[in-house]
Image (cartoon, rainbow, N blue to C red; front, side, top):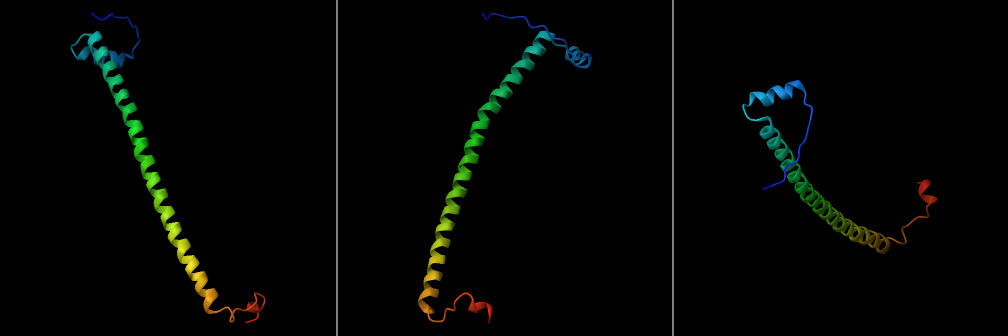
Length: 101
């Protein structure tokens, strides 16, 4: 048999009246309400780490995708720069002459 502890609380009149309207004992209604409260909180606490893991996983995937895109852009930029340097080094003007054109 479980040891029972007493808990004295003062309730708003409206809440007390609702408890009386159920037709059940006040003790049973309050015990059920407290059990439901703690069951919901336990469920929420178990769900939060899962949601955090899902968010972390999604962020890691986004970072990996961005890293891949940056690498591809870096390669494209290197190719473009090397083609410009190879194809027209003699046609390149000094920077100050580009202003006079």
